[in-house]
Amino acid sequence: MRQFIVIGHDAPTTPDFSLDDLAGGAGRLDALCRCVNSAFFLSHDFRSDVRLFLVLQDELTIRFEGSELRRLNPDERSTAALIRKALEVKSEAIGHMEAESTPGVHVSKRDFEAVLTDASEDATVIELHEDGTPVVDVEPPENPLFVLSDHGDFTDSEAGLLAEASDERVRLGPSLLHGNHAMTVAHNYLDTRGYTDY
Amino acid sequence: MRQFIVIGHDAPTTPDFSLDDLAGGAGRLDALCRCVNSAFFLSHDFRSDVRLFLVLQDELTIRFEGSELRRLNPDERSTAALIRKALEVKSEAIGHMEAESTPGVHVSKRDFEAVLTDASEDATVIELHEDGTPVVDVEPPENPLFVLSDHGDFTDSEAGLLAEASDERVRLGPSLLHGNHAMTVAHNYLDTRGYTDY
Image (cartoon, each protein chain N blue to C red):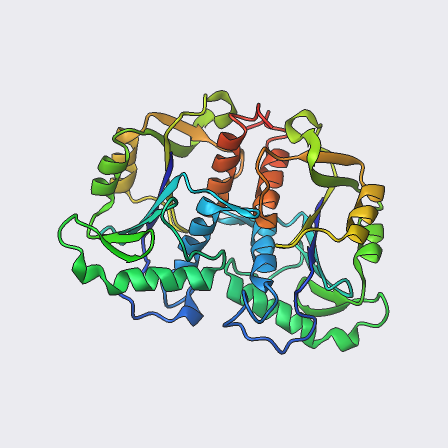
């Protein structure tokens, strides 16, 4: 299974935002919606063997489970509407227990550390870093977990947790990419088994 | 210079669409907006050496010129608003002459064939095809032109024109990708000079 954690530093944790202003008033939720798109969509197909966690303001986490998702569309607005639905049921999530808002979309009151601990249990944690090993030189792991940030950089605390948990530190190319683009490149690296299998 | 042509089969050619319904009433303009995002954005940086053509219903073309663009944001909605502005000035575009709506955004009454002819003049035309050569085995050209379709397949006529113009026929991996994801993978292939330079 492929897992991704994306940290949304300014993303809303309450459903009172407008779908008309995702890039403004909704704390750059547009960036997270593009990550959802990159995680799951193929042309005329769907990546059901993917799990994506969106960590919102280090207090709330929305898990998208590829094998269960039913109503996901590629555009930012409808994805944001699914996230809003998840935020509407967050009071049903007690402690680290999750509540499901729509098929395959689960919300919990977990912070980055808790999610990273859970998700990394049977996974190879991959840190994307500009000083990392070229990804082409790294054997693609069977169960990778990539950790990414939204439009902002990791905080020192997040970077520390990630450095401690990471099994590999790689770079995807000479240019720094947006999170959603990095996810697409990561998928392509895995799809091709490290650029060998087309 | 890197060039991309993206064909929008159902995309609007008039500005009377709602920004609230890009994935529905606006003929899947959301898909084209994501291609604009993939063409130009880097983390904290911008790909100014890129030119993107959106061909709308084979009758109208919007050219995004990276070196001139000023007001582009990553989200679908604001990109759609730029496209709507371009459609508002289309009457100023006479024949194949362009009209500029906002900095770096130009509209003309050109169809796919005309755009392909112009754009391919000094470019290596790359056709993405599931039976193509693995991209990792192809030397990255200096001035590539990639031609992609929106959520729909190429028509027979488009596929014929493309096959005739193409210098290389490649595949990016074992899975068929959405246009915007294919563009991100293509950029990564070029950024790394064919997965050799990180």
